[in-house]
Image 1 (tube, rainbow, N blue to C red):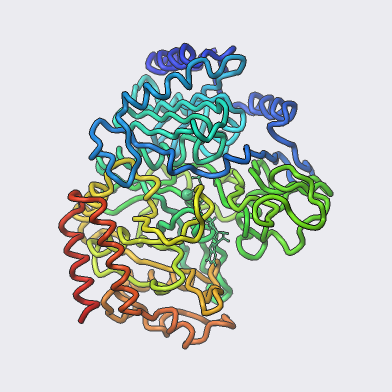
Image 2: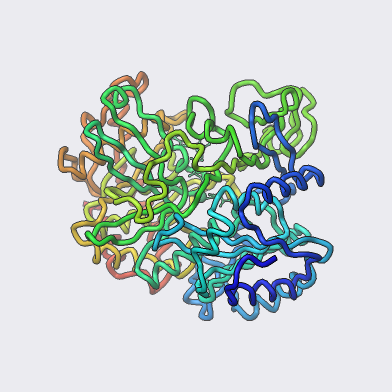
Length: 594
Ligand code: GTP
Ligand code: SPV
Ligand code: MN
């Protein structure tokens, strides 16, 4: 039974039924009873495995197809009428041509199957900044993930009312054939077409497809920002909380930073850290002229490997109930889960993420790893011990500082501050990072990833830079200060020098001091760099003042090389790169050459 009288929704769902001809249609109302029945069905068909309900209540395990374990950037398209509007950083095809190609694939693809209609809301119910989407899918896995990651069902339809302003998302697993896999955004039509995948970022259409690709385009049109950013709050001993957003590329530390545990030196003074979001921020200018951020999501789709009691206890705790684990190893001894870095002892009685039994000697799958490097947990935000009390605040939280960062073995220092918003936009546009397992393709190759949005910007990257500059003009002196960090500098043996994780708070505290004008900094060609003594290293055994100085060092030659890389990126993006950024680049080069 349809759950709404909204004729726009009804017409579109009818269109989807006519196209994909499912045997039946089920509207997802969001009730626990309905979700429980779907879980039971998935256990019966083997789509999911119920885990140990005493140790992991409500938790389930799912394996995707082996050829379907990450986002597929090569098969992700932005289809705008004019090619230039998508820009060269995106794959583009004419919208009509793309539809002509995909319609035959969708035609009749749900025959013998059920189509689930998932109404969902991105952002807190009742927030003026929230937006509604409807996803149709033939995957129970998608329904159960969307239930965790977004606000689904009747409440989302209520938020929509009679409006036609919703994102239409059509997903079909079809035959999971890589050759025919397409993740397609039509930003000008508020539409997403995804076919032949069952993996998170490709099929949970509220996440990257809507909340970043479509929303970034909406933000450009409507004067707000959709960014690949975590949102965290630092509560000071006086009770005041300051909010920081940070953009790092996929699998570069957003979840970990968002949930960090303050080191003893701050904990004992009463500092606390609160998580508002770990992946996506939607930001609007508030009535007071400041920038406010909401997290459009309702859960965390986090990287499992490396998550443990020491690195991220908050995340680990968050996954202890009501969580879907994807492509981790199955510990058969007690019907729980395992991944590299959970602890030191890989279980002997286990199945690799591929389902192959562990033979006690060598692992067959994936370079000797039991869990896939991009294995993930889908966990409800409400489980998170450090969830901010502002999580559901419809107006969001005011942003004091914004951080860019990536994995750079060399070049980028531990932290620096931009000279201005404009220079900060340059710093974001110049971001680079070593690639990770979050997308298919080579891992560990440095590539330019402006604002961590390379795979997620729904329009021309040059226009996107322009939009950032515009927002800065509107914000004026109320704009957040912009910083850049690098937790991943390595020594000659390739080991990370900086301890990272909770200790990253030491760097955040320097930023807050800068925002409050409490500390000086050294003016260098690339920006303001801390005086080593202004970063608190009390209690760190491996970081002496000298090591810290090394982490803050800037090698002009490496930086001149880097500037070349940025120039290549700008040339590639082409004429829509704003002149202000070209000037920033020229000025930086001049400062480095002096
Ligand atoms: P997406 O969900 O893909 O957008 O990723 P993310 O940015 O949220 O990345 P996440 O926090 O899940 O971290 C990915 C990997 O980086 C994990 O294996 C972490 O253990 C590792 N990592 C995170 N923070 C740090 C850090 O400060 N230092 C080091 N060395 N590794 C880190
Ligand atoms: C990322 O790759 O940045 C993620 C995971 O957050 S996915 O949803 O698969 O895109
Ligand atoms: Mn992400």
